[in-house]
Length: 219
Image 1 (tube, helix red, strand yellow):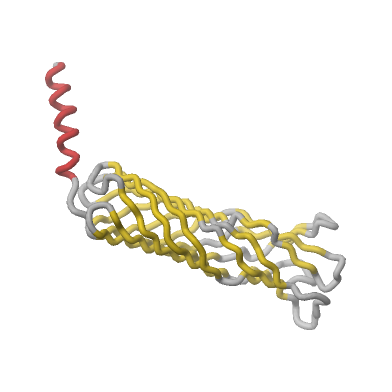
Image 2 (image 1 turned 90 degrees about the vertical axis):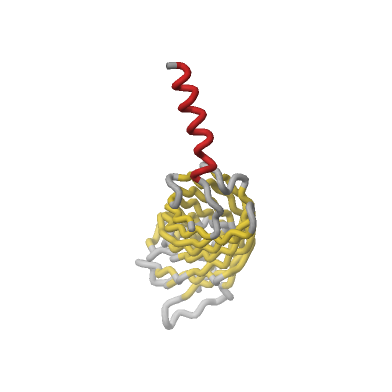
């Protein structure tokens, strides 16, 4: 019985390379948690004494990615993700919170990755590249002073790490994380007929964290 167990373990170990094939292209469908991780987002209203803070809460979204391999360990990953994180406007003076339609974010990524075991059953990787983040305006509800929050689209650095777990010859589960440190500008959009007394363009720290899990088809 002991010999059978040893033979079984040895067969499993030696079978790992036979699972593997030269990877040329991965196609992945993502379920992604997107957290804007924003801070220092404040707007003065037309009443100069009134101040609004903006808080963000992460939300689950979706995406798709393609990973092209060059040689044995290097690949270029291109991903697009979309989510609508919850956005809340708070008046510090009164403590009143105002709901919004959420801030739809669409991060686009181009990342070079280094794979430690591209033909193994477990393939951890790290990467770095660029991101371009698209933001949609967020409508503010229940506030007669502030109508919308408009964060401008922005490009920045993208840092990446993850691991791919082989399920079969052509199928794998991939867990992936990306961090994008950004400084974007944001406008407060006021209702028609409301004229602000001061400019309302601010630099905003929005450092999105995207944690994704998905099924990858390997070609």
